[in-house]
Structures are given as structure tokens and as C-alpha cells.
Picture (cartoon, helix red, strand yellow):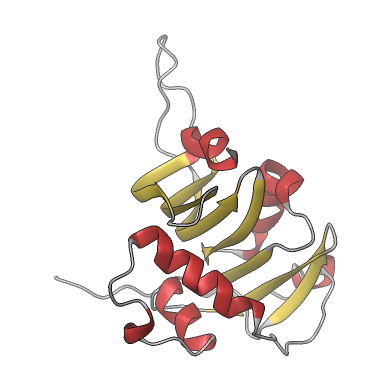
Length: 185
């Protein structure tokens, strides 16, 4: 199974579980983009340097079907692609909420349209379910993994109408925005 190979790169895992349909496995948590340095002689590592935050992944067997989450910087995407790009194949939905971009766009990578949407504050999961028009009632009574499958099925009927931009061009047009977080002081 594909997600079993990724398991060492999961960080702050919410869950990794099988869905009701045979062969489907979902993950939510964070996904390591750049690993931390080796900290000691036993090979233990420091915390990761770069993460795909609020990640959701869905795989069917050895095929990645969905990857989504939040990138602090568009510049992390080439690093993510270097690590996971071999699994970017036609049929994959790849949607990244990105802090340091001004406008949404689509960049085709390995034959896969990869959607980038600006998001400085908020939750990637909530924003994505709003984009595809799902509501709380669509998830009622479903397991955590089946919720990710429900999102995937909604994405099949959704068209992202954003301009196509080459990734190399988009990387030259980023801004200095930082993630806004709110909480206890």
C-alpha cells in the first residue's frame, strides 16, 4: 500500500485508516517535506524543517488519488514534488492552499493539474469542502477515512476555473505573507 511507504514521513498524525471500500486508505495530519537534521548517534532526527500542514491524502492500492493541505510558501512545492512527485499521475487531485500567493492558479506537473489557492488563515479542509459545495450533513455518520473518500468523490464533479500558470513563473510572483493564527494569548 502506498501510504505504508509514506508512514515514516507522517508527522502529527490525526489518523491513517482504511475506508469502507476495499483498498482505499486515507491519512490526515502533516506530511514531511524536508526532514530535520540527524540529532544524535542513534540517528534520531530533529523536527522537520518544512511540512505540508493540514494534509489529507487518499490512496487506492499503490495509486495516490488525493493530496491536499497548506503550504507556508510556494517555494516548498518543488521540494514536495522531489519527494512525492513519482506518485503524481493522471487521475490525482492535488490542491494546495498556499500562504504566499496572491491569486489562485493551476500548474500542470507530471500531467496532473495542480491547484494552488491563496490562504493566509483558516483550515485547508474546511476551505476545500466549501469549494466543492459539501456540507456537514454530507459527512454525518461516516468514518474519518470515508469523509476523505466523500471529498474525493465531490472533486470528480468539480472544475477549478483558475488560470494556467507555469510553476517557474508563479515562483517569481510570490509575496511576503505569513500564516495568520489566532488563539489564546
